[in-house]
Amino acid sequence: MLRWRGMDATPPGWGRSVVTIGMYDGVHRGHQQIITTAVRRARELSLPSVVVNFDPHPSEVVRPGSHPPILTSPARKADLIDELGADAFCVLPFTRDFSRLAADEFVHLVLVQKLHVAAVVVGENFRFGHKAAGNLPLLGELGRRFGFTAEGVELLADDQVELSSTYVRACVAAGDMDRASRALGRPHRIEGVVVRGDGRGRDLGYPTANVELPAHTAVPADGVYAGRLIRSGGELVAAISVGTNPTFSGEQHRVEAFVLDFDADLYGEHVGVEFVQRLRPMVRFDTVEALLAEMDGDVRRTRELLS
Image 1: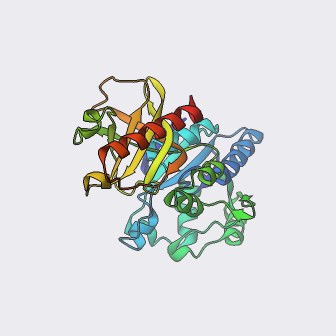
Image 2 (image 1 turned 120 degrees about the horizontal axis):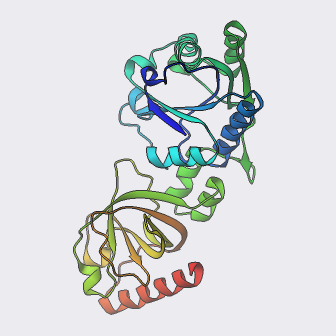
């Protein structure tokens, strides 16, 4: 899959294409339906399919301080879209000036002049242009003016709940990894670099990988989870702690993964942490012995669930 950033980086000689547009944070099942529809239309027309994305999140530019928790890193998002068969991934820097483009200016500058669009495929609730003034009917009208078709894909629902990034974020924030996984079509994953912590886990016989996360990462609710640590060498089963470690009066919020049957040095590695199931909330124990007994149970349940 071709990847580029900015309109001016569009490959020279770029011909006609089929485009889908959106933040696609999480690339959940609803997003997958839209993107695969665009890929299918492109193949029917013997044209490349392009996913147009934005960075940073538009809400942070339009309403500073309102940046939502992010479900997928930019690199992870691109990889997931690549797996869906898209031919190109174009990231547009979302600036204050860009946010002021009227709907018809956005279509003309980005879709017509740069991507030579033949067809646009979007969710039926798609909005675009300054103050989100553009919608699917307007996109269709502009398509007739500029010579492309506009197709709206019906939004996907799960248990009568419309699938959206907002819904997935709410599931993650509540620690409901079952619903988050169903909406995503896979376990929720966060990514970061393993850094040194207090070393207390190793002293207790449970050495953990302390994962430092980028800002705005969508971290599950405090608690202990069964999941996996993802590294270049493969996937490893892990019991994952999210919180401040109240038994030791901790103050720093951390994500720490105890990897089962593994004792190699992970410091400095960029890893992923996948959350499969919440085992229990974060609890303050009166004694270290009580904490260790609970941790023994966490590891046993993790092994039973994922081994």
